[in-house]
Image (cartoon, rainbow, N blue to C red; front, top):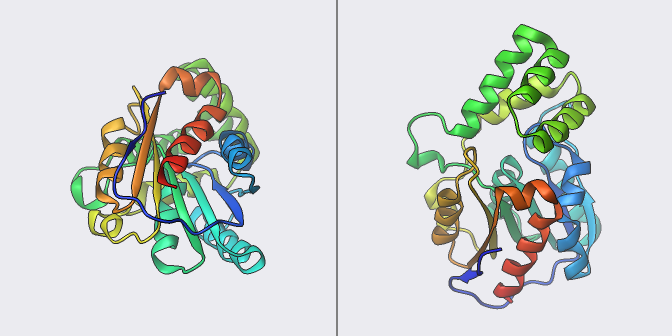
Length: 243
């Protein structure tokens, strides 16, 4: 794990609960394993959210609003698209105590061409259209590191028919802009993954640099593959640095 690097910090609102939002094509099972160490470190109840048949964003926002109404201030932790939804919700809600962004994607206003994450999602949509979900899983596993292929094969099978529309939604999403991150009023803890071609570490650094109150830590791609909880431990280090 790389050293945590802070930016401007101040007092934190104490969260009552941690809501974990998975990335595109992933699910609550993975989000729970990834952010469990963060919840344990902070002593928070963890609610992991599955993407819904009515859309990733809709399901995530509904879960955030319902959880905040029932429990009070929420620390929202998201991977990739989950981080994007978390930032958008934080900008419009007084119930957000902070955001943890793991493997954030390109900023919408700083990349004119489709990002690697968007291209990956669109390529998978094309695979599903040509081969069906089972065929797409077989093709994906043949061209992906074994641990990631096994993980995505499990989650894609679990998601089922809505997977295609969820991937298309992610590819079309306008990720947070630089002005949005600069306007973020709550603390932002960022986890970058080195050697990740889909979510480059430099992009994670850019997110951290833009937010007024941020800290960042990093893990390697191999660390991530060996243990999903490495994400949560890195997030805990960054969040603790903000206190």
